[in-house]
Image (cartoon, rainbow, N blue to C red):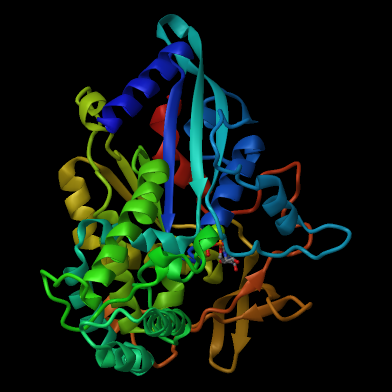
Length: 461
Ligand SMILES: Nc1nc2c(ncn2[C@@H]2O[C@H](COP(=O)(O)OP(=O)(O)OP(=O)(O)O)[C@@H](O)[C@H]2O)c(=O)[nH]1
Ligand SMILES: [Mg+2]
């Protein structure tokens, strides 16, 4: 029912705005995938569009201007676009730097004035309102929980925790959880074990394998919920499907359900459920460097989160049953860590990683594309002389240095099967250079215009 009301609201808003279009762009990506930098780059590009060569509305001379709009209301803070831009440009008091990790939800609306061609060379003025939301990437992993009950989640989480590199990280929590009496609901012991579970998730996030499947998301970034009972639970080994009254499993299941109802569900409903277009940002390089276990975990996380969304061609039925996501861009971020010749192979590796999932989305009617992008390009290509000959590399300002350095980033694996943990491929972090981002000009980037053309080109036609 709420879906129908939301749709009618949208419809009325559109009718009121003389058929202005509204597109909700879902920027989805795990923690550190590059969401905040992507959103800032996208907005800055559209406000100063000279670098968006492949965006047809610009190439065809139909783009008038873009403007940041005040949000229509509500309680969600506005995305701190100006502050992030200031981080990236630098100021008298600080060097250009990357923004901090996101700790809360924020939203932004950008309106684009453009002209649509009519017959006889006439044009009609048009407006597209683009709504975007930013949030901590960790919270995305709450979406797969929404369709699970506590016993099923426990089985999955415990089996996962006993497998591969996670086993050495989960031992303390598992020992505490196994030692807890089934009938006991001793709160201090529950808090201790929940804390051990959180420590395990934290360790898994920072482990060399760079594990992605870390649930629930608020255990890592609690936002305003730190210490709340809804966050004091953990998966139980041998959790029964029908726990007895007053048992530990029953209490844990109740808290799990309350987490879904009060935290994960509202986050999805209010911020992501109604998106029309989706960009899935993936820091694939980082996971390629971390090896096969990291990649397998990443794939599980991407598949699990995408499963929460409805993809397919939108139609008049959307008015009754809720909108569908009609375009999904899979974007391998931070492609500026590689020389130009490796960009397409990187996009191909991402296509291979999401292959089955992407096929399902296509089958449902959504259009799919993969790109290697850099929302903010902070390196340039360089040819590097070695004793072995001359090789394509990159040059940039390493995170821990004030000198521009030329770097050979290593060899990108030819296929996902060729990925190893032997450290053949080691990405290096670079920081924004002074003057690489200017307030009055779109930022240097890689394939942001292709990304925007795919995601929004038809809405700007
Ligand atoms: N070289 C390069 N690095 C990037 C780019 N985009 C992001 N990064 C790096 O990736 C880090 C994470 O980017 P964010 O945009 O903060 O990632 P996020 O997805 O918002 O992360 P959370 O807020 O933790 O969910 C940045 O601090 C940069 O170090 C890019 O285009 N090029
Ligand atoms: Mg962020």
